[in-house]
Amino acid sequence: MNFYTRKWVKPEDLNPNGTLFGGTLLRWIDEEAVIYAIVQLGNPKVVTKFISEINFVNSAKQGDILELGIEATNFGRTSLTMRCEVRNKISKKTILSIDKLVFVNLDEDGNPVPHGKDSITYAYMGIEKTGRDD
Image (cartoon, rainbow, N blue to C red; front, top):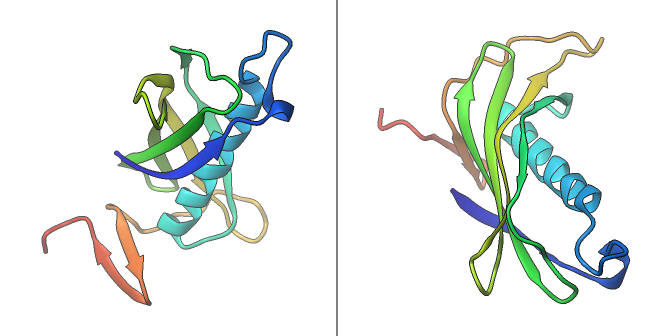
């Protein structure tokens, strides 16, 4: 799993207990995951379909730097399934894990449409390389 996005926990992100508000973390994850899906599927019309059980393992406090990791686990006909882990950048302790996030590729009318992908694509400077060795 790659950890590309980092977030700094600020005072406005805290709940009354002085720890990171779960809803804020979920918003960060949903945004990171949909960006990942858009890049992988090559379509800005992608929506969140499903998020499985969310496992809050440890708390994050003001000043903590968190890393969000996203990994594609399955390419369906119209969907992309991922898993996610959020960890403390310094201690490496897991803050949260989600086993399954499903995003659906849509057409202009908002209907599910096949995306034609079956593996991770790494796009760099206009050159695409798949995660396969072919």
